Amino acid sequence: MRLLKQLLPVVAVAFVGGQVVAAVQGNALLCLVLGLATAVLAVFVYAWAVRWAEHRAPVEVAVKGATTRVGLGVLIGVAWFAAVIGNIAFLGGYRVHGFGSAAGPIGLFGFMAAAAVTEELMFRGVLFRLIEGRLDTWIALVLTAVLFGLWHSINPDATVWGAVAIAIEAGGTLAAAYAATRKLWLPIGLHFGWNFAESGIFGTEVSGNGQTQG
Image (cartoon, rainbow, N blue to C red; front, top):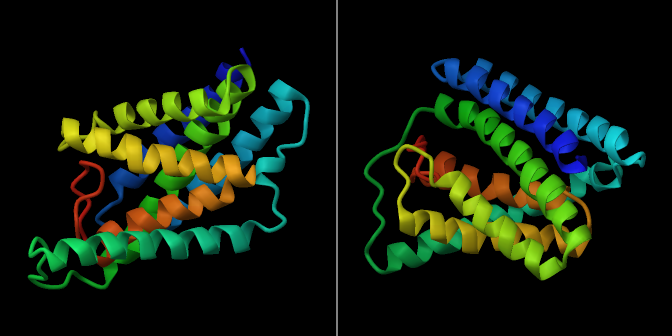
């Protein structure tokens, strides 16, 4: 019941926010504002759900140190993906064919912020944390990584190999970042940095979603 009490409200915010942001993707400023609003609302709803279900302060989303941890995560996430692109380019698999509009990354910033925050709240904040409390850290890491891969397998252009890769490199890494810090801010920053670099900077597809604006 604790899982449902915390997961369902966050899923509801993610679904409604995702639909609203998708509906205004043609307007970069609206996409930015509504995406950031979805991210902020999701954190407040998660904090409320934790207080309601567990009768404790939601320390994993405490404001103190949030900016530093998110910023560090974003820097690592961007550098992480840049290293991947550098390797692919070295092997001849990545070429720049042109540049997108200046408005593209602005809208993507909001879209990716909403996705990174809501997914981290669902998978690391609720699922990983509660499974770990009942079972074991390694079991929670494996189970949530598999679920994370399956979650992305429903995207329009998803492939089996893509879902497996997401489960291993993202599901495992992001859960480990939470387990190491016991705060959600670092994995949120990592998630956002990777996704924004993937699409907003290097113009590649994101998790089978076809989000390419770089």
